Amino acid sequence: MSYWTGSEAAIAAANAAAWAAYIADYPTAEHGGETVANPTTAWAEPAPTVAGDWAIPAYPGMTAPEGCREVAAVEWASFSP
Amino acid sequence: MLGIGIRLGGAERPFSPPAAPVIAIASGSGYAGSVYSSTVAGQWTADGVAIAGATGTAWTMTAAYEGKAIRCGASNVIRMWTPAALTAGQVCWLDPKWSQTVAGGKVAVLPDRFGLCDFVQSNAANQPVSGMIDGYPAAVFTDGSAAVFMSSVVSVAPMWWCVVARYGTGAETTFARATCLVSGAASNLDIRGAAGASVWSGVSASCVDGVPGAAVLPMARRIVSAGPRNATTAALSWRLGYPNTSLSWSGALFEILALSSTPDTATRQKIEGCMAWRNGLAGALPTDHPYRTNAPRIA
Image (cartoon, rainbow over all chains, first blue to last red):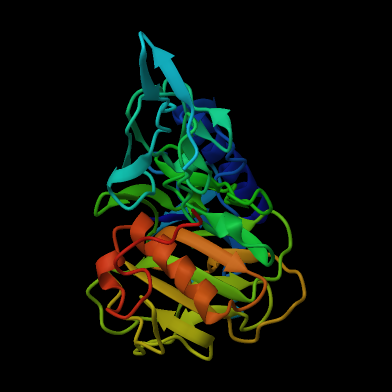
C-alpha cells in the first residue's frame, strides 16, 4: 500500500482521478442478487499530514497524478482518539 | 364423542375430515439453510403470503423468510425468533448473509434489516472487503493505508451492541494496538480493546458467547456484546470500526445488532441464540444456555 501526497488542490484532483478510474473499473455493484450502479462516491477522504501537505491512499496500479508524490507511509497531522 | 354417520351401501362409516398438514424442521436450526417438511404437499406461505415455487412437501428456509410465520397450506406454524420480534429498542441489524452492496469486491452498503439505519462507506479506499470466512459472508476490515470503517446514515443512540466478530487472524490473545469494534462521533465513545489487553476497556455488560465478563480474545468468530464506554443517549453518527488507522478494527464482522438499551437476560439470551444458530456458533454457547440445544422460536 502507498499514498499520494501533495498540495490540497493536487490531492483533490488526484482523488477525483482515482475515483474515475475506480468507477471505470467497477461500474456496478451487487445488491440482494441484483446488479446496481456502484454507489461509491469518492476514492478516499484527503487528510492533512504533519509536513503540511495532504494525502490519500494511492489508487492501485495508477501513476501518481501531476503534483503528487507517491510515498510508502504518511504521518498524519491530526489525531483525536 | 362427536361424529357424523354416513350410510353408504347400507353400512355406516364415520366421517373423517382430511388431516391437516403438519410441518416440522427436518434438518437444521430453523434459520436459513434449514429444510422444512410437511406431511402433505401444499403451498408454503410466509406471514400468509405464498412463497413462489414452494408447493411440495419440503422447503428450504432462506434469510428473507427468517422470523416470518411459515405454514404449508393449513398446517401448524413455525416461526423462528429474530431481533425483528423485539417490541422496542431497535437501532440497527446488519448482516452480510442477508444483504450487502458490493462493488469491486468491497462493501459499500450494509442495509439495516430493521429499515432504520443503513451503514455505508462512500469512499472506496475506506471500504471493508467482502469476504467469506469459515463459510460465512463477512465484512473484512484490514489494516492498510486507509482506515476501514462504515458510518451510520442517520444519527442514532445505541446503548448496547451484539456483534459476531473476528479479531485479527483469530489467534491473537491480546490486542496488538488500541482497536475499536464500534465507535461514536464523540470522545472515547466506543467499544475498544487497549494494546496488550484481552478484554474491552471500560464497557458495560460485556458478554462473550453467552458468558458475562469473559475475555474477548482470542476472537476467531465469537458473539461479543457490551454497552459502549461513555455511553450517551444523544443521537450521533456511529461507525463500525474507527475512522483512523491507529484505532480501526482489524478483523471481520459477520453480524451486527445495536439496541437503544441493554436487554434483560432473557432477551440477551434469545439474541445470542439467534446469532449463534445463524452463524454456526451454537456449540460455543455454555451448556446451561437456554438456546444451546435448540434455536429460539416464537411458534
